[in-house]
Length: 528
Image 1 (cartoon, helix red, strand yellow):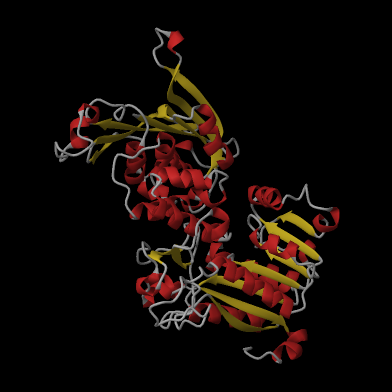
Image 2 (cartoon, helix red, strand yellow):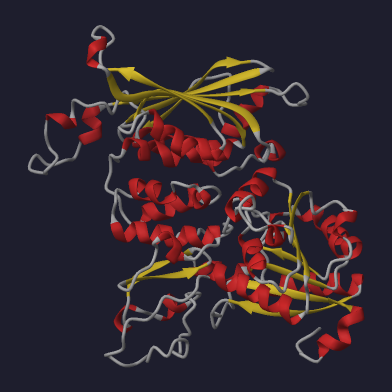
């Protein structure tokens, strides 16, 4: 089976197209081979010029090696295990090869071309044969929302007999401008989804794989539930776990994506957690960390320590708790005109619009795509005029001063600063605290200390692939106190989420108040 990745250099770009080799960590000047348990993967470059570069992944599948070790009395031992489409059609075998051969590129890392790894590139992906029983329509449904232009051509059952019609295989060509890591993650997840089958047993660790690969895009995909079910082979418990964790990433309520019910609960720590049966016998001290349930049993009066208590009601996710804390702080500050800086796809904007206290709301983001998605999700074209005119969406960078952002009551940077390169933090501080200078500034960011509680998160890894850093509580407080002293604010700190006795809460928030309002705010206590 074959996959080609072509990058065409834009006319104004200073880099050659052959830098694709740096991003893939594969030298265009030689052919490389990588042994797989079921065959051999080869990487070569049919074309490598300064203007255009094509990398090809050729996967040779040995049907004998694919089934080696299976017992003859296993249910799936048959001639079909040896004679099938696995050596020719892009399926989960190719997905696994992408994940192994291009592992570093899939994670968006490139030591020699860091800036290019973060840059959206003009790409074309070609797959000569993709199994897709839903036909071209399904390919369009899963790839088009991700920004791809899709050309899906059905392949005939037999070109010599056109009356037989088309097969369920497609020739697939995807063109678009996006980060290489995002393009690879789309293939990694969606190839087995289109095929509807995997060549290996789907276990609980598949949820972690899905979340890692799809964290930046799957949560907002209109076919999120269908993709999740197909990827996890319709295993109900795994699907619910994955949907609940995606709800954390996308900052929606798990119930809205059918991710919780009365029987099964999902314990969260900012999108990472374990699945357990509801009831006292199923929980441990670790399970309570970040789940939104007070380990003492006080939250919801669950009756901890008894044997006959009713199943506990799933607590709000950390994403919900974070938005709730931000809204409470805005109301306590008396803010009515609010900036949502780094608003993304509009999760907080939706909450602000729902509260008439906030008479003017401005969402700012560097990504026009995110702003377009926010407009769609909020249905701005369908809202009553009295509601829609309260909201303005602005494209802009938070590291540049913008006169349009002056004079507001409050600004919110919710899970934003950790996406900024540390050398650019000073520019953000000046743009927000000095130039915009609202009366109240709210900043939330992950607490890195509690990452050790996350299942499937390796030591030193961040919670999201785009995080540039993650601070401990002491580091965050040192930064906030320094910025406040330099710019004329006072600051207090709020922990969000159920605290771990040793590592604190999963999210930390700093509430900055301009010195002119300090006397009023100090009555609440807790300021530094």
